Length: 383
Image (cartoon, rainbow, N blue to C red; front, top):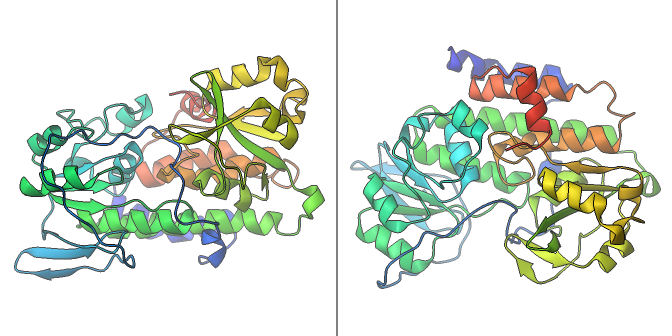
């Protein structure tokens, strides 16, 4: 499959594709790094009663030292964690990090993850987590034989149980913008070892070039030319949204849009905040993006939202979803700025063929050839 050759050639590919070079500081220009809960299905591991450990807060680093068969790495909270020098089995607490683990070459090492993942995920990586161990349960992680578990949503009690079982716990909970997500991907690759760091570097270069491309194309937009965007979801008979602490807002801003809910605060519901129809009417967004066809249908048919510009002009769109949803903290988020820019500024991005970019991404990072029907399904947000 010549994966090594593909990753060696990737820097040439991204430069030719986007006519830009290097990675700019713009990729990390999001607001808050202490992110609100991110938008995806996640769950804490369940645990039994035991003593809880403590963690400290410090600077984040991905440097590691190796001594006597043990490596010391630093998690995103600044804690130094000892892990085996050779890693053969890992568990991750969220689906997005399962996707990232596979992308950087850790499929054969992934022995526990969340249970609900997309059909496309299982099509690309049918051998990941072969025993279907559920990382939302501490006992399942222990039974999987994992040497390391990484991700967010692990409390002190659960962490102590895992440590008592000889499993290293690495907190990876920083992903509110591109820079934070890239650092998390680099850390995951460092844990995995082998050629994973090389693959993570190639992906991060692609991510930078994608962001630089859309930012360069929209840089000269005046404020009154920018599209007002709302990320709106529907679940449990409530509308919910996110503010500028969510990575989906970062994607909108780097594609030249204005996030209508940028400073919004409201009651938490799952991974977002409840918002009233009255507030949506006040924002009156030009474009609405949502997760899932059901939510799109609900927004479009709701008579209380009929006067909203996005509804009136049929500009309510479902966010794409492939191996994982694009609008959250997964690696396919690197494609989200292209999708957004193409919709918000179709004349500016008339030469951008999103179908081709999706196929190129899957080939270069997953070594998988998508069919046209699969591309359509991804763009439609089909799970």
